[in-house]
Length: 500
Image: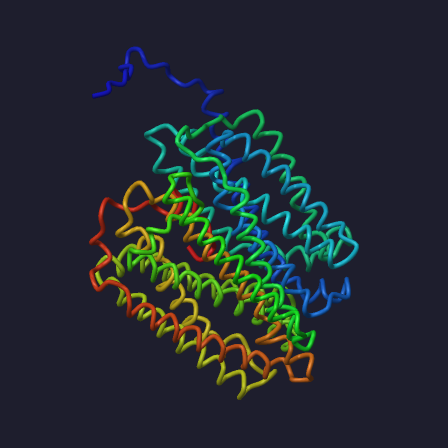
């Protein structure tokens, strides 16, 4: 039995005003860094048509400006979390903030599309270094009495960041700050990043995890190469006429992914530590939940990018009007997510996810019918019912997944399980974005009007939602409150994906 000395009220030093102020400043710094990540993940969505015109970006490259961020974030997230445990959360957090700031400046000054894509990939990798440290730093900075409040504020920041990205991007585009146009979306991060870096060096405390294993960089490299060899030809193939290198690249990528899986199994058996815990997939609820995470990531990436083009290029809407329409969709997601997690899922279990998938499917079919029937004359009030159905269904389905994934996971594997869930969702998002040329942009290249192309994309969406519905039928029947040991919340697990 281990005893820990806890000073009583008479001996415990009372925090000074300066200490409390320093703590609040440090919390503001780490939460602002989280907000930067969430905003930058989606800020370019409304700007892609403008970027395409300004830089002359071909359709096949556009998805990589958005998807490169998500892909790099997904690949580096788990190693980044372990890097912070070994070398110090504060040190890796500040490294991530500095790299993010430099990458943002490079994106804002990019002379061509290739440089911009490289900057977005660097942004995503840097965000994957700083974001997983934030929950640990909040825990270290918050006194025990205020920890619940700090976690609640952190959850609010995540929700606001997920909704704010398109609106912030639209406002910067509409204002044309200093005549910078779309470049302001990236350059605006620079002063915020510099302020976070300077204040963070002064105020953020260090924290280490002595039990954290060293990152498996060779395994990360194999996984990243495999995923890239699969995703790149999916995005480039439609515009290039599906040359022979496309299937060869996909086959090589699949081989590297298989090699990665074999490597992880071997490392797990030897006790060397692995990026993925293979035994987690023997838990039915976890394995099916990961599949739902992946498909919903594809849904989000595919739908949001094609939808943005439909509104701006097809209907001629301004970036601000587009962003406000997206905000309505996001609000429906947020309301349904809160209701699902707090009320419905603990009582009805998998039925809530099934109802969510059916609600989304209804919204996709309704939107597709409206797009074909009304064409370019469609108005916001006419598509509002479809947006509410799509957003409500997404909130009902995705929000409980963080709990569902950890329901039957042993306590010693919960952090790894939560991190893999977030990684899977981000990989799905990158895959969905890379499918946009196949499901939407190639039709524009062949002369189809934007509404017809978007209607085609909605059919893809309907097929994916049928897949989600099939997966939910494989979930355990028990209600959501029957779980062992109380799983980690999204914040505690480092889960900051927008859909949460």
